[in-house]
Length: 49
Image (cartoon, rainbow, N blue to C red; front, side):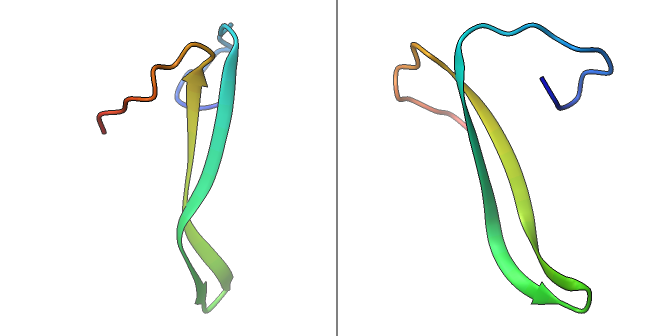
């Protein structure tokens, strides 16, 4: 698993959702705010962010 842990972490079955917000052109090419969500296999469809 990637992210904030300095060491590898075992996780259960999940779905990796990746996205980018506000994709735009900058002086050094295209960029945006990238994110990842790891949703558990039995996710109930609700989210609080």
